[in-house]
Image (cartoon, rainbow over all chains, first blue to last red; front, side):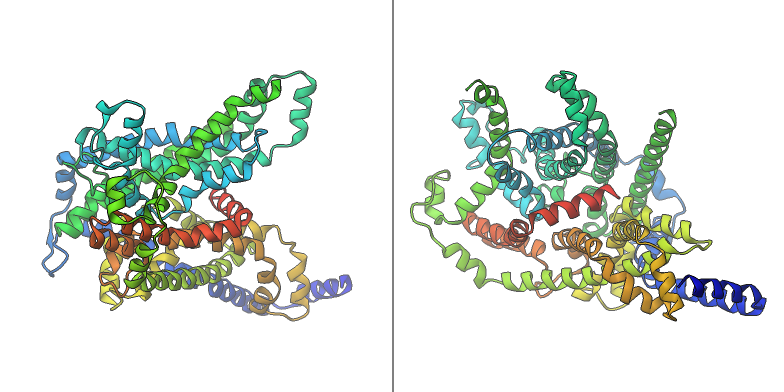
Length: 314
Length: 273
């Protein structure tokens, strides 16, 4: 085989540039042939769509007729003065913060528990993970009944521990609706982070803990000095996933409250959906959705730059 | 004995979390076996006699139709995603060319793009090419949004396959195309499993595209169907719970059969993203 390679390379040196060019062309064709199918599908549905969203965002258009009125950037000015949009952006920010503060710690605690010396861990793990496999629509409907004012599980539990005064229709109330929904999002996604953390903990070399044991380290010290630092990269990845996910969140809110009552649970995505497909303001809907894209892009760039700087400092 | 006592807080915490994650499921399944009047009089008790009437009711409706729609969509989209993503990843991971890095970046950016930003143009495009309210119209968007994570997983995996493999194949006069399908693709099995599992779960539960791009019960997927039940059954809570249980069952069953694989697939799919 080696001989063959040598022969071939010797031949290649003597080949004229013409043949080389033909070869080059053939290689380009090969590359195009392999990448083009995926790139076309992706290009049409994702890349082209983003440009078109920006294009539509400059028009007043119902989406049903052909009557497009060019407005320039007027829709964006309208957006800046739209209280409901600010309310929804506020709710998205609240979701980002609460998701970071609840889902990731809870996921970490669950993952750590899976490595503690408890019997029947396999069973625990199976149950812990189940929420993530359920479809969001099913979760939404299930939790509508859990939060129900009359026969809901939550009110039943509160009654059982003597807190009847707290009983209420959780998602019918403007003050509690957003928290009820956020708690459901946490219920759905904490198991997902548990899986990510568990995979990372499995990857920590056992010798590190053995060495720590020899040094007489306490459990808390083991966690603080070995587990946590080694989990930092995955905690950061999870945080990015959580932030981006919270910014584009839609399904559960749409199913549970539709953004109500009185816009108290409105998110950018639910507001965009309502403007576009209920009120038939496709132009303005495009403005909202393009702004969502810019916000997600901006946040991603900031995180990536921050991460780069952090890595540079290390 | 002392050890047992010191583990008490651990058990307590574990059981508390078990209730937190599991209780909603228990209530759902428990209620689904009750009769309407029984639920009204005592919503918390165990069912006095297990009744499958609610399940019969769900099966009498279009449940199987929704189920089949979701299954067809998920299988076709996942297979297409695997073929397209694996092919694109081949030159991206193993060949040098000018546009390699930019094209790879273009795919990875897709991870952060909100689906809503593409929703209106995709809705208009789908209507224009006559695929509105058809299962076929959903495949394009599903594949497109599954590509980023799949390309990332495949390129990572292919980088570790030794280059000598294809060099020797080339000398034997094997073209890139045959080389890829005959030699490289069979080696990708673990990555294919990861991509398939990750995307199957996502597409099986997908909601917003199905909501916007279809509107008849002929084309409704399972998530849309569950909303239908919710509207139709209105006060029949046990009936709705039976529908929810049935709708959640397939993925849960698959999970209990192939737990390790799914857990690994999910972890790999997201970490590398």
